[in-house]
Length: 378
Image 1 (tube, rainbow, N blue to C red):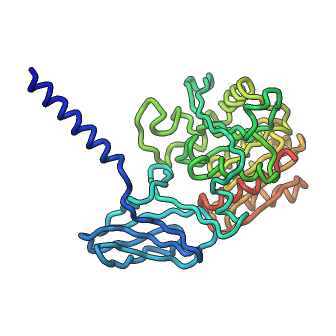
Image 2 (cartoon, one colour):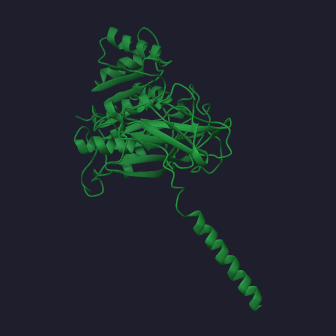
Image 3 (cartoon, rainbow, N blue to C red):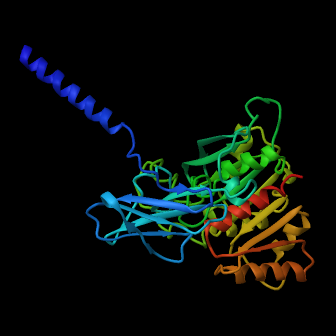
């Protein structure tokens, strides 16, 4: 019996030591390393690797890394501008995460390493970073959707000071993701909390709630939060399904207005979204005229229903303070955005149009949120 107890204790000590070892110090390799001249150096230790390449959204394609002593592969970029960048390694033809960079995000079903670079205060990268400013709170909450017959999850950003001002009421921005996304997309890929913290701290945006629902009607939540295990794909929305957002959206608003201190007039509500969410935000504004005083369509595909669209007429008859369209000059949906812009111009509907470089990418949608948020509730 005594020998059994000693053996059990030894096994427990071994397990604890193993666990402690797993929680020990990192490799000591810095990757990526942002240099003073805004170049970035990547490192990968692979003494048995034959080829190591780097691919990232700051490169025109894959580039070869150079092997040095002890199997250390390195590559240094040209100077980069302020931005959030993503990358991965290709080791002997196999896509590999950077084992020395814990910062990652998920775009639909693909995980990628990320880093932020700020060349100067106020550039895009600066707004995507965490600074010593008052921070808001991000909550993941569940609400009941009688329209869809299920409990659903959404993400809510409340600005700094919300908890300390129990009588104050705030305007709210409803922010919708794109196809394949979920209620985590705007936080992880869009840097919503960092953008809002920094804009509000500078006085460039009004303190507001940002509500980010799951716009996929048959998934209750993002992977890992939903009851069922599933592989997210682009094909998890149906453009002809009004229940997806338009019919069920009042369930979201009802929950928010019951459980949070928000103003309930139309000019204290905004709705915006990217791609699929841009279509949804435009359709919501048309379906419920007067509900949203600010409407943003980021790379959306909603176009007029004809030469005289009665829903668009009703939307602008309610006199929204802002109808804003943002799209990249190389975006495949630019044509649709221009159709909507030209229609508004021809009918005398006030519409702001913003065109950026690039295509249908998160780099643009973060820019659009940064611009759009500064125009709200003024």
